[in-house]
Image (cartoon, rainbow, N blue to C red; front, top):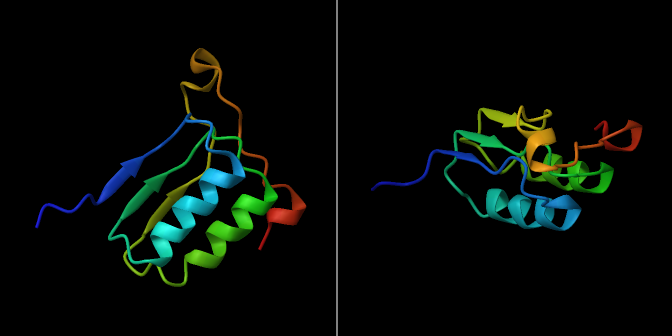
Length: 87
């Protein structure tokens, strides 16, 4: 009943620590269809942890790690997956 299906947390300075918390929620079965994490300063470690949770996030069809349009206006930091985050 009334579960959140789409969640945008863009430009919230989550960083790798926040990405770990989000990954824990995904792995625990959060029933999301779409998750927006753009411009949160998530680095390679956070991206790897998120990728690891995707196998258990069976309902998730969309994960957005792009640069959010409001990044500059809100002083956000882009995500930097780099080669180490390419899994």
